[in-house]
Image (cartoon, rainbow, N blue to C red; front, side, top):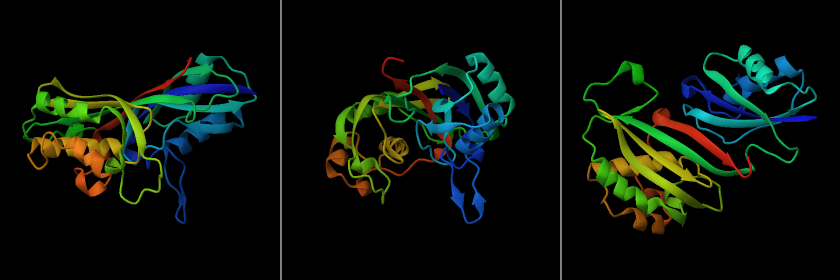
Length: 252
């Protein structure tokens, strides 16, 4: 068997996330489902197809990773061209490489990086619908960047996890978090960690925006973390502006 690692990007607007989902009404459209169909068209059969993360419905990616095994040993460039020829227009493979038998796209991860995109124009932009969060208010990026520092370090992020989640260990290490202007009326929040809880980035963004509007105090994040209670953090920002942009592995 040959073991492959793919790097792909996708527009998440018409997907119910990455993970294949079967319901009583049939299979929902997912990135993983479309990828599996394309890989079978090229390789005939594939084994151990795994994505690096279970992305939410509507979330995008510019650096998603997926691993799989197949009996065919194809050149990396051939895999990229052949799989792309069988994928829909809202998914694209841009890198393929061989990996060891022990490699796993999800369990071998050492860090992930997300970016959340916001635009603040008073008038909504139809060309940004589903790709940015429209927040028609002034943003003080310097103030919010200061608040971001309180996310960094190893903490129990239970307050930043979706209510009802069954995860028992909610401790995560955030290596970097920052909020900055990109261009006129556009801002970005980036965060890198060893792992993320369900809706964690979106709740971080909602909390920062409520700091901006004065609903939450600028210095409240450490106390919110300490509470370990979802009700103390800000709202869950929409999936629209969220992108998984980088996944890192040791010795890769």
